[in-house]
Length: 293
Image (cartoon, rainbow, N blue to C red; front, top):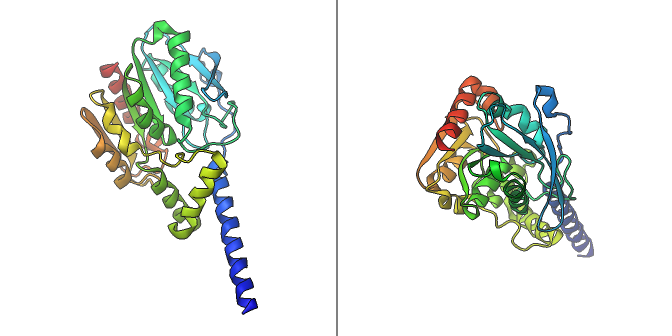
């Protein structure tokens, strides 16, 4: 009997340790892109800036001015584990051929920004607010027509944050997830083959405790995206995306108000829609902002 009790206690201890480790993966992405891409590599002029979040973190960013003097601006939001340089590599065409001013910034604990943890959107909305405030206060002449581009986590943050910023005119979001807990469950199963119950449920409990926010996993773009309307929204997805699969992106599209568009790119895995679609991607994204900013 004592042996069985000891075995059960050991099993519980191991399970709790794994769940604690799992919450740490959410807070500290295992694959963080190095800060290796900068605007000068593409011959782009830029201005470095910093902004401070409501909870006291310093975020680092770049303002890339239009080469044509265009006043329209696009706020650029990168994905989990990436940084502003990785997003610049995929989207600098918006400045070079589209002529837009571009504002890139690193979310907390990414790239050059401060922060010890990332929450896949739960607290990154605070960073979004700080970047919008910096643009409006520091570049008022470029704040009359602002659009947003978001990729993956940045797309989800855009869906949740835009309803609070009516001054933002339109958005392109690539691979947004619909529901925070579903994303964690899906990633854990795809990458680690860990079932939701009880492992992920306990992991999310530990996450709330470690962040100190009981609502950190109550981050559901599918519940917010409808409030972006009547501002135009272009949602992009990859047909081979396993992290944000087509059916999940369609949930976000179905919940959104009009006007909206869904572009499913055949054969594209996660965060590779531009790479897969090439010039068509650049043309469609540029045209969307040209017509709606």
